[in-house]
Picture 1 (tube, rainbow, N blue to C red):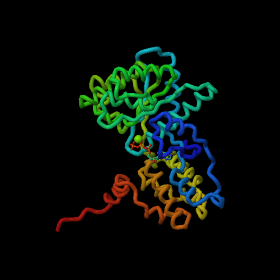
Picture 2: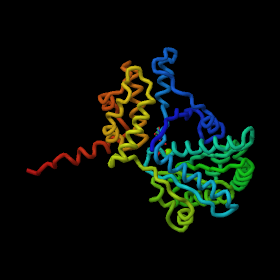
Picture 3: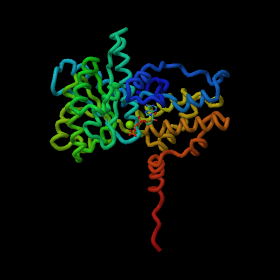
Picture 4: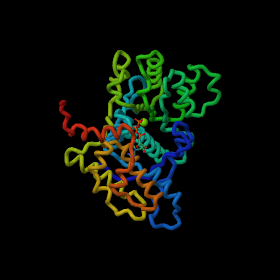
Length: 342
Ligand SMILES: Nc1ncnc2c1ncn2[C@@H]1O[C@H](COP(=O)(O)OP(=O)(O)OP(=O)(O)O)[C@@H](O)[C@H]1O
Ligand SMILES: [Mg+2]
């Protein structure tokens, strides 16, 4: 079930793949949205609010958080070797990265509650696989997150040892690795990078969570190398949300309703978005990325033109990403009778 909305906290300027950026993301307090009529809330601030908007809890996030809680417990008793991990897999722009970051934030905040006033801990590390990555590039991402100096003067083994020792000292429990589909294990560099990741999983006593586009169908999980990974990693699918059964519709409607209640537009009728829930699903194909884009852009346009409300007409004027537009047009094309040849 979809539950409460939280203000989105991602900063545009500090990458989350650095210690500072990550801490800033975790620390950003959940400032409640102000009243739409608050005269001290400037137009610019309200634009910023709607540009960032909210992160909603989706059913996939719930499944992920339950699975990771169990894994953290399970792996706690595992001293070395085959710790279990998890892969978030799904189509593009379905919210995989967002789900992963929210998970990391929850785990880090829980760790802080368990160890109050204890500096020098780093419960969660978040990195992204660089494009065309080599093993050295991958381990350098870990090192960069940790702020290790003089990387260029160290070789791969030295960086790997420094990273592993530091992560053990800092009590890291969760390592989040995003965009693992970028490792093409059919190429030599990709295969060696995936070996490096597996090796890190054995050296660092943490639970590893990967995320990537349609990973189950990728070479990462096939062949000799892949089978080892497939045997240790469970997959949580992050699919677009459906709108078929009444239970599916309820989930989608709750999500749209949460977005509606997060809007702070002066002339918006509360609940108006929910009346367009089916239309919103048809436009976005149930993808969180497209839904968030559509509502945020509509909110911003209405702030700029002063109408300050989201109507179906306005939604129709907003052009989405190419993939979403093609999907939304596809059913109409199928319904169009085929032209008979004269
Ligand atoms: N649960 C959510 N609530 C609100 N907005 C969301 C949510 N999940 C994703 N979004 C928005 O959708 C957009 C895409 O999300 P995200 O980058 O997490 O998707 P992704 O699946 O990782 O995409 P890609 O496959 O391109 O890596 C972002 O702008 C994000 O803010
Ligand atoms: Mg992503």
